[in-house]
Image (tube, rainbow, N blue to C red; front, side, top):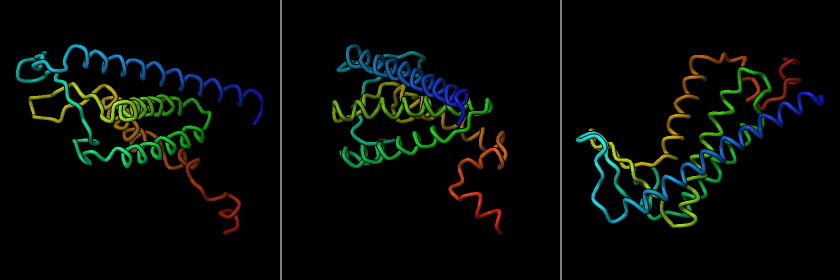
Length: 179
């Protein structure tokens, strides 16, 4: 790898870390506000019958599954984050993959944000309630993960071609050329 490519990779990884850090701080700040202003209070109605702010201590994972399974949830989260970091480090330098860098940084911020709560408090602070469809209460970190995952799904399904994703292949090219 030449020096220019190495510098480009380092700059992109620094940008990824900055995005993750900023989003992580915002997530933790919103959770702090939820604890200070919503804990022990009646739900705060933003849009009547549609959206409320309501404090909840989620001791499970998504949709409240796996209640009180902190160790298992943390283990799965750490493995998931390791896979995302591996993927992030394998991404090509090309400009067309910059959006993938950003989306992965957003997902990582969401995952770390909820893991911090789980390590520190034994539960995740949730506070956004979409009451129109009786959706489970969620937080800003959850929004990061869901929106960025949908973005990645759309990119991989409709934008990138199979050739663009060859960097994900674990097979060595020299074996393919022999066949």
